[in-house]
Amino acid sequence: MRRSLAAAAVLAVAGTLLSGAPAMAKTESAAADCANGYVALTYDDGPNPGNTTTLLNALRSAGLRATMFNTGQNAAANPGLVAAQVSAGMWVANHSYTHPHMLTLSAAQMSSELSRTQSAISSAGGGTPVLFRPPYGETNATLQSAASALGLRTIIWDVDSQDWNGASTAQIVQAAGTLSNGQIILMHDQYATTVAAIPQIAAGLRNRGLCAGMISPTTGRAVAPSSGGTPGTPGGTCTATYSEGQKWSDRFNGQVTVTGSNNWTVTVTFRSPQRVSATWNAAVTWTSTYVMTARPNGSGNTFGFTVMHGGNWTWPSLTCTAT
Image 1 (cartoon, helix red, strand yellow):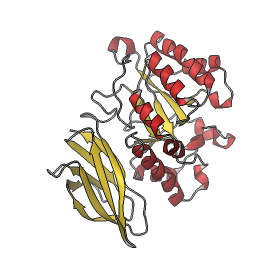
Image 2 (cartoon, rainbow, N blue to C red; image 1 turned 45 degrees about the vertical axis):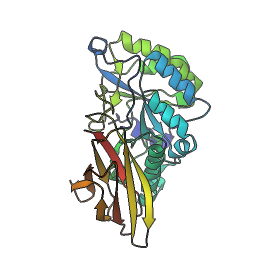
Image 3 (tube, rainbow, N blue to C red; image 1 turned 90 degrees about the vertical axis):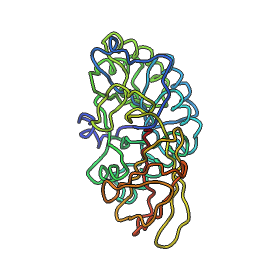
Image 4 (tube, rainbow, N blue to C red; image 1 turned 180 degrees about the vertical axis):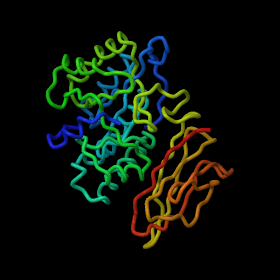
């Protein structure tokens, strides 16, 4: 994400997840190593065939985990690389579908950018993201509302590595050296200088008693990775994948398939003014007008529902917790 000058004021404000991942061979979780807390390494604009594999290999070799803010069009074009991010122990998040200046879009267009990215990442095996980083750091109340409706927390950053602006490897390392507990650094997927900085960033964090952690969807700050399978989600790992069903003029069917666990809770967030007229193959409860919780009812790991769309055809967002 290249920062625009118009967004400078936004970027000066401190930044206020994600899919499950297997544990890495090297971890940053030992309390003695993390005495001064956790920071979040983030990489925007992936996945890219020319660099993502190299980036992931460098992170794994350094024993680091990071949050990958993927664009939906890149995820759709490179699903294997999304799966590789998860396999490498990274967390996958939403960075819009086409990387536009979001504030130039209508509310409906904003929602489309976000929902299409949710679907692309989920279809590629990246889980259902719970974090969103707006392109160029540009955000407002309308965009944050669109993100919240999809169960996404908006994340900016505290430290800008300036890799998008031609920063050298030494300058990127220097920027990372200013991180303190809870803070987030902006980097990008596509630059060789950024990859080259990784070993030195890892060494610098160790020397300062800091570890690379995940971004909490509750607080928006860097925290220790959760125990269990899905960072930020207690109880283990599972993935909920949405499939489009039949459509009529006034309604549409949706189907959700859960993998990774036979004991799960799926939170399904619909969009105003949608309402659900029927459900099947799950026990459901409602926590608000548009948020439904589904659990197994003995009918397997696939359930469905009919949505009276009221003019809003946007797919629901999903969050899966293994119980």
